Length: 225
Image (tube, rainbow, N blue to C red):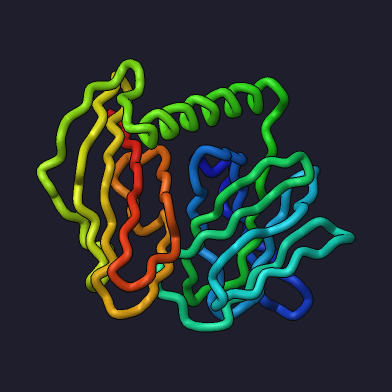
């Protein structure tokens, strides 16, 4: 996802600095954002409104203001790993935000909805991804892809949480990696897509976010070839 404009610094009467970052909405991938860990942050849809914000992590407070159609995010605790918040726009688009918190000034994230022709193209891409995921979940090989068995290569997500490569699907423009995730810790954990970022990844599908002790799930990661 390309940042459309350079970061702008503006000042309010209290003297606190805010940074505004513009992003194109892309419903097929999570947008990476860095927000303030000590100040309130704001999410805006340019020339639009936010209908609601969806999140599972109880360490953050998210409030959607009805009159302005904006959302305000504030961490309630120290958060080391990235978390995911899904923003639903008034037009029904869902944009996942992969949020990392840092000691910095308040952040304003401005999401820009695409024009109709761009939106249709993006929706077609999203539908293609959905079909690929559905095919793999049905135990079949997507058309145009070659199945290769994984050798169990491991990704160490966090302490006692391991992802093992089960298979990969080679296509003309991408490789889709199929990892099995095992929670070997003694407590329930909450996962997010940001923990599985590979170089040049275009989208990630995490089947289940919350895992009980010894429970397993899987993740699909698409990487450009």
